[in-house]
Amino acid sequence: MGVVISFLKGLAERIKTENKLKLYIAGLIITFIVLSLSGFSGWIIERLFLILKIRNPILSTIFFAFILSSSLASRSLNKSISEILSLISKGIHENNLSNLRQKLSLVVGRDVENLDTNEILRASAETASENSVDGIFAPLFWMFLGTIFWEFNQSMPGPLAMAWIFKASSTIDSMLGYKEGKLKWLGFTGAKLDDLMVWIPARIVLITLPFCCKTNQSIRKTIMDSWKDGIVDCSPNSGISEAIFAYCAEVRMGGVNYYKGVKKIKPIIAKSYPIASIYSVKKILNLSLRLQLFWLLGFSLIIKLINL
Image (cartoon, rainbow, N blue to C red):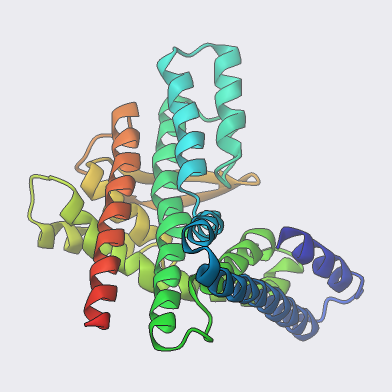
């Protein structure tokens, strides 16, 4: 996906124009091509799986599950954050701090050059929360939707096709969805589509995550407080994603960030709770794992009810 996007971006940038409409149309074409290729590739693999399943159901199912798992960022997210926490737990000195910032820069978009340990932990907590929704629960939702399609007609796009369509929109957003220069218009369609495809999963996480944690307040209050803090964020999804994890892990998020030297103040979330620590970041990762199991059990139950 990244190679195709880079190639199409290069073609679009050869159009020496600042015309917003032309850039917008180019972005629309890029989004259509990448999503179509990704969805069609997934659909072809699904056809092969359905054919091979008749001959060797066990081997073909294992192979298909392996390909499906490539759409989920659970392992990579846990590994990246855990490496940062491991370095912090070993104690901070100048070389270690530099290494911490370098590792953090791989998983966050903010400037990391001047972050101290507390800010590194806050960034880790926020990216673990937001990326759990973007990289795990959103693709899980679209896989589930594809599975539902299969229950009615197996010639329709299934779990892999739907997951790859989502991953295509997410990759376009991460590569082109910047609000600066030509990318402001070239990446507009991909960014808005990604927001739309994460919108429902983010709100399902908001409702379901409190069932996987123990706090001093009711599930209803946790949801309402998270909604109140998260909805003021300029993003339609990241604020809600961070807020529900913040209240469930009982950790404060938000504050001043810098992006390419530009100061941006994010609303404070769960301000009555303490700042991020190694324990609270680990708790966020554990909550994400619990919710994954909760979703898988819930999806399996829904599929069985459909088949009754």
